[in-house]
Image (tube, rainbow, N blue to C red):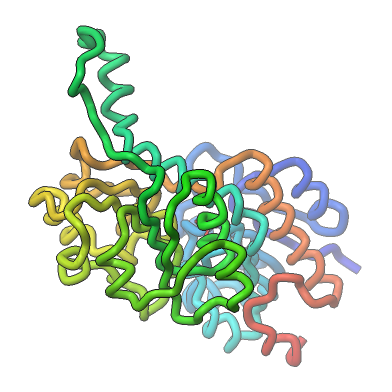
Length: 326
Ligand code: GLV
């Protein structure tokens, strides 16, 4: 039997390559630049499986260009780049990488929170600039973190991992989620459920952990910022389009908010020019980027592919309906 053909849009990591190479012929895109849409459509045309990144759109056009495709395995937990219903219509399995990146992403949400509260970006710039004239009493004074209120929008695995870290700072934790967490979870994490508007109004730090869905697109805009404290900081490690960036720029300019720390942007890799200001901390979508975690994510995607191609249920299947047709 011929070995199945796989396209991986990145060379992945050695341990993930080993998983795939054991049973598949894999075309690894390894040029320094990202694969172009044209090249992706060309290379996927004869493949049985695709291992892709969140920067690649898996939509009807791609699926039409790949008639033999049986699985699209995203190396990410978020899968807004994949049209899952379109995959289902064509009996293509879609998978993601939940669980393995929760702690790393929570670490990074805290990295951003602390960076923006304590003005580390500005401080670093000053230290490197050669312009620092020495300690001064009112120099780059930021905001305390300990004892403040941390608000979480989205209280799934990642939101909860962020909450868990707050106890060391003796913070009050409040959250809103479409689904209220079980009492035992709230109790363990000392987290209190609040209505959406109350979380906005009461948070000193508001950290966003919702997936990008039609209901969460533009979740935070002018109306929501107007409810927040002018001393509050916004942290986003979820997806850029959850925030109306123009409204955020306006809120930051008019000091309706104290600052924002963003790992994700509305139109990546473009950064809204209005966000290039002192009271923002900006990162290029790095929240899960520890070597350990990115390696686990790549291995998980590889395992999903190998499972499906060997007739098993992929562990992280997003559209179980396709199994009936395989
Ligand atoms: C990264 O943003 C992911 O969704 O895994």
